[in-house]
Image (cartoon, rainbow, N blue to C red; front, side, top):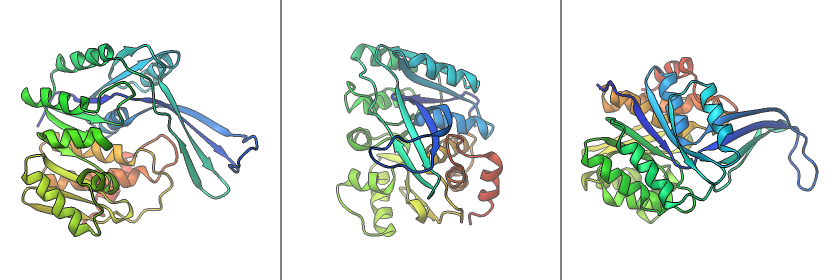
Length: 309
């Protein structure tokens, strides 16, 4: 059981804007209401979940330009322990619009600021000087950063004994998994199919591929989220699968981050992989119950945890 905070890295955070509109139509001016702004990005979200579930986390993220101070103030407003890595370019602003006439949700996500090599090296240095037992690396890499950046950083962390968890996609995911040494990797089904380079027709085939990767030393645990079909967890010895608990989904925002934060917290506390997986699934399901930026509510997590067999 770890006593150090779980470290999270968000290379490409966002100011997450949330609002409602009666209808979203092209050309017309869309009047919105109930505007809110919250700190966002995979690692920041995971750190928030860890704290909500009673753990300790330190969020490291890159922030700068005209919008960086806004993000910093939003993080400070929720009393989330953090360390900011300054950059010159502007932190991105994402927008989620709930169309109240039909319950549809629209998500607008910019690619993010350009980050220089010197800025990224400052980030690496800050991480390497911060002792931790567990680290979550989450979200997209911003423009300007090489696709192998996660893989290289994980290699450095692994060599000092830090257990690394990765939640990303595309080439950054592939290069990190190819390098190996991950404690946990959490792709969606589509991301996992891209990783292995082919469509997988059913859960059994997904499980076989995941076990093969774990047996090859690419990751101790591979969690593949399957949407309404739940998720599976594989290690070198086999596969565990759970169906999603029966909930009426209202939003997809933060479900994956809630899954990761809850699972890493449970693993860091010495809970079994099966128990950690159940908590992760409960947290992911709890997140979809709520519109907007509020992630999972602990009461919902514990209630849903008891429903997962």
